Length: 179
Image 1 (cartoon, one colour):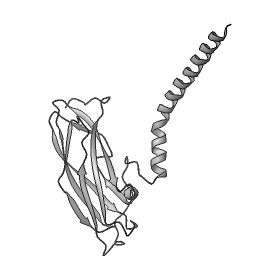
Image 2 (image 1 turned 30 degrees about the vertical axis):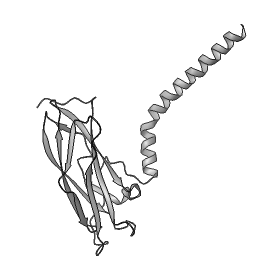
Image 3 (image 1 turned 180 degrees about the vertical axis):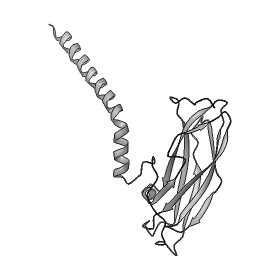
Image 4 (image 1 turned 90 degrees about the vertical axis):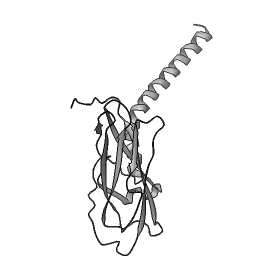
């Protein structure tokens, strides 16, 4: 075997190892994402928080701003009906959002929340949220959704303002059942 053939085989082996490694890394991303979020104190929002209301934050006020982030080309419009809420940590609060499917076809979509500053995400405990489960929308359908939450009284005292934003993403692999 000449040197050129050996180099070619070595290159092919290296490329196959890279392809296999990339494929394995892609499968590992989902559980890795969950581990990283939990390690950073960011709850993966697929279940309600077990937080209960208390008077531990009495006398303190925190402003929570509500926003929506639309992905380019999104089929959804999210409108926070409550733009801002001044609340007491420890108390159960709620905000309403209107979500409209702008497309002319039924869609199943999932809301994805984000909290800013990111270090405060673990202090916003959602007890009820439309982000916990995928939502089915008919063509051009618009609905109102509620998020209920408690801002943890352990929120650092220097934080007096937070932002909760939602984005909505269609789930193309899911079929909408006929109504």
